[in-house]
Length: 82
Image 1 (cartoon, rainbow, N blue to C red):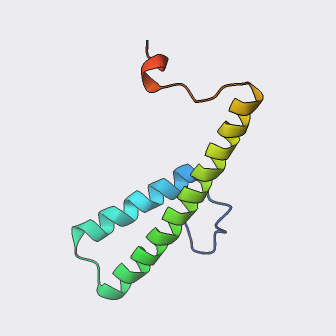
Image 2: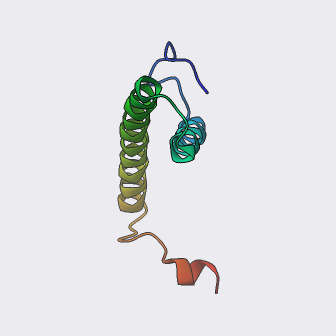
């Protein structure tokens, strides 16, 4: 698990997701003390917000690229695999 001293902006999306999954697994087991559960939950909320922010940034970049290339919408999943 990444240390809390890691800046929110320094952690990569994939690392945040991996840490979030580890937190969910720990909490799901149900044998974490209450204080530790609260710490884990708080870190999970922080990671969720970070992931949402990073996804929004990517969506904005895709939107800009689509406008620059005159694409109105990204490809639909069915179009990719046809």
